[in-house]
Image (cartoon, rainbow, N blue to C red; front, side, top):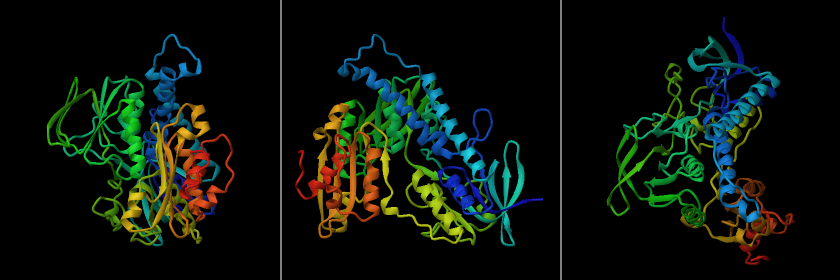
Length: 476
């Protein structure tokens, strides 16, 4: 006999597990199905983000940052080291521990909030009176559940190059890039996407010669142009080789490495020889195996589930959130959609403001932004004022020994409402939260300029950028 729930969430990543917890908090009898497994075959909820994305990459970024600081910057502080070495297996083991702590934390939250968890792959069976049958197949599970409402949160997978499958040894996705057992002498990246740049940063810090091949003529085209140029200069100084406007041709993988044939921006034939190659050209929605056709769930040409602005699908009682639907593939975007959908199912008015979703690239320097870029405002013909403030004029940045970058603020020329904030520099991922908060409450640059910020702090650069909108910075 099948088990019945008010809500069944398929997928336990950021969108899925958060949706399940919020639905349970609102009094709905909720189940969550997730098929991620750890090395021992046990459940590992958290999706790509926790297992092979956000969390493990940040763990490796932290380890590699310590290594680079010790090798290149400790001497500035009077700290001397006789020998410096890197134990890659131990670094990876720490990363795995961090991942498991997050996996276990989610399982604890399920128990705390009385969410029924099923370890396996969920798929549609058929529609029933007042709901849907969902099959669960896993290592120790083979059963059918019924749910009045279904939330699909199956996430995404790395996109492979046509005719070049990931072997996770020489040709790497984000998964393989997180499990390289020794520091490669040379590493290639196809695509200057977020994951590629972050992984490239990790292995460059540890000693690899990293080359980025990007098809687009501009570096980080989605980023504000001023910020992207500053980041490009910083990465180049660090030794990251970035080639733009390339056309990748044949790629050959062998026991000794990978050979990439390509034409550079001038059309000249080139060959890149590397030990390993990371392919970072985007991600595709995970809908294969969902059996969407069994219930008539509509997908678009990319395989993503079609939804309206409230994450409703074409089927009554079926919702979808996160990477498997339209919009940016960001963990926090998925979380916000998960909460909003849970509240809508409970009769409340959940809301997600897509205009104030922050973006972050956790390189060094970090890059973060929210709202419109200057090129977008120009294209829209919207009148604006801009102000920026460099970290080289910030006392805390000097004390940290990291003065790369700036804060840039864009405000409406007539109303002074903040339209976008763009940061490249130390702890940009943390600093952007103030800008998100300000924009959510429709703050003006004058509002931020008149708020007292602690001294000395990096956040003072945000205040000074707001002052710069009115051309009255105090420290530059």
